[in-house]
Image 1: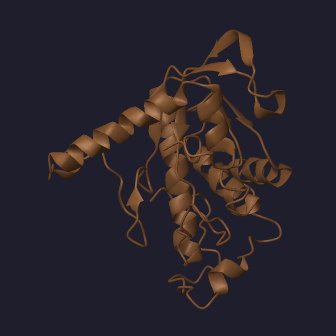
Image 2: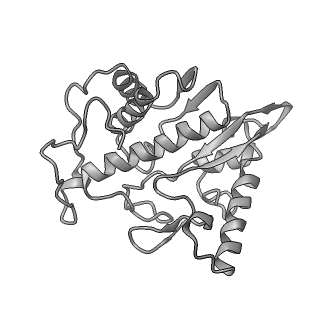
Length: 234
């Protein structure tokens, strides 16, 4: 857990958060529950804290359609741009929702390339991740949801696609969270705002070469993007 924060890995979003705040402690608690669950050989699915198996048999700490909700996270350091200096006064958050975004970049050596090869399935599962985040925020009674362009950096997810999926999910539950703040790439924020307002992507979402390679799977519906509008709640 925590990406490479405990192993000297490159500091991206996850590593930075685990350095500046108490988030790592909450993630380690979930990991420990997973270990205990495996040792006890718990068989009832509802009682299993572990995430299951990935596409290539790797252990998953967070299910594809779920997230880890860490309440009462405290930020006590500055960002990496300020050398992770201690803050004069800590910042208390209602909580943090952690999801495992797909990696589409084979050059990342410490994370498997685990995005579905079907663009339809990929979009569906991205929406499932955002549904879990929104549900977690609602459970925490959050007044503000701050969402970065998750997975759109070194993992090379398309910010237009990811933003559109987030916007569709927000449109499914209007008013569930009083305020949503988006950070990161402008394309991500623009796509989310457009989709949340009910506008179709213009131009239509484009599949990256990842979905047309030798291992790509054929989409099973007539819609070339696998998207529905209004947003499909399924």
